[in-house]
Image 1 (tube, rainbow, N blue to C red):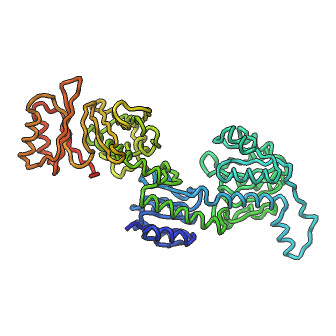
Image 2 (cartoon, rainbow, N blue to C red):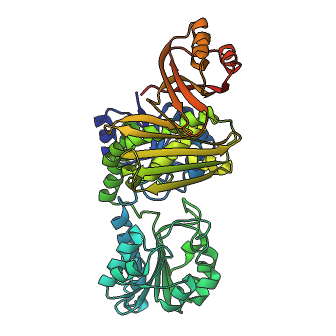
Image 3 (cartoon, rainbow, N blue to C red):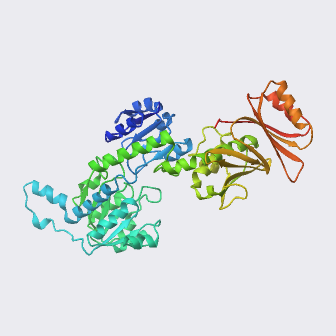
Length: 529
């Protein structure tokens, strides 16, 4: 039975979703690492938040896992490259806590501008220090936003509601998108920080964003500016921020995230002009339930139907789209697997051509399926998730071509490889929308379901060859279930596929290969349809 482990605390609604879908679920949050390692190998899926870290020994122990679900946005606590190599889908929930996190950033900004945390502490201590807590009015000021993705875009909208001018640095949004958002796009971080009165950050922690706001950038900011970071620790250089807050160059800062977490000790905490929270960007009742339900539904969909949603290492495919793609995924995978078993190992190029209606579908899953099929005969544990990475590592040049029309079929998929045997290709289509069919090999028309045990033959097109092959199989007591022959139009050569009821041993294949007129003999084993 399919089994999932919820490794961190999250809404009980997640458990309900898994059970309702017929998936066995263990809710075991907060286990010591040693206990996590001991049980990790029992599960097909692992759901977690930010408390657990799926890397190193723990990820190695999760040998059975097919999908990892992060109830939240950031996946820096998961070794995504290793998961991709192992063919494990990594999902997150990019929309479940966007509003909550955006609202926290705005709350922090308002609190920093009006010194609300400090004033609250002072008042509770029995003091009445009205003159001490002189604030900064935000209306009419310039706000700078780094990152205008799901959360950043909401922050921009809220800042405009405060009647602030909003400038954005995000190299991935177009000028048209910026215009539609009603913000001003700038080309560099330096250009942004030099103009704004407040700065808020909404990008992931990557090599490119680590210490993005360093001493130089902070030095470029206006004296008396405010910095807010509710994204990820490490984006703002904490030492540089400390110096700027200490000197008063930065009026105030507000942090929800830190370079090292849990942040029980940090010299920034000694500064009165810093307000801080313990990474609570997603900590609202609504967000907690949203992300828990969403990740459970996504994981269940993948484990039960193959539907991929919000994956960070494989293209997402909706359930409706997956149903439409499924016969073509099966076709491209079978064609690739057939080709992979026929060719000599060590091919250098794969080209996939999509003709007709299939060219208008989402072709990325089909490309992954083709690669998976070709590589599966020579690489263990290859799947649609890691096929592209494995092909790149082996220096295989992968390309695709899409054509609106096909000469003979409504849909046609053609796989061509360049390897030690030269150029070899197979083509196939889907009959009646559900039946994958092989229709040609190396330009020879040959129609057959790509399934089961088969012997692939290249032979000279002359009398007696077919009879000789049949005699060898009869002598070995191997029954022929089907025999398909394809003849080349421009040469005296042919190909054949012989469906057999049992696997021939090596001596049978060698005897067939020694027959006069036979050029290639390969045994091919494809899963039943």
